[in-house]
Length: 93
Image: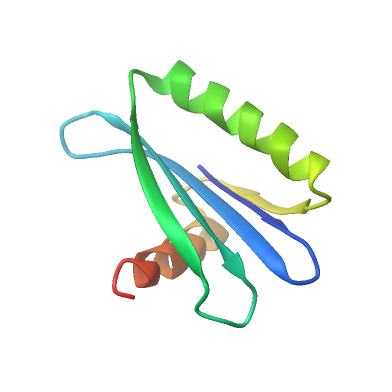
């Protein structure tokens, strides 16, 4: 699952997925739109429920900061694949 929030200048992108060992990974990327400023963090969740709880927390935090949800997609959708591709680019910075 991919979820993206944006303001006029900033973005936050969360990707929840399973790795090849079946572990649930919660990846969070953030930064300023149009720049290379930002970061990327991966967290290992105990299970899918914990990852979804972290997503609910993230939703509350971003709403309180004034960011609006602009994307919610599954990995296998066209939008989801594109968002994962953008997230992968951050690993190389």
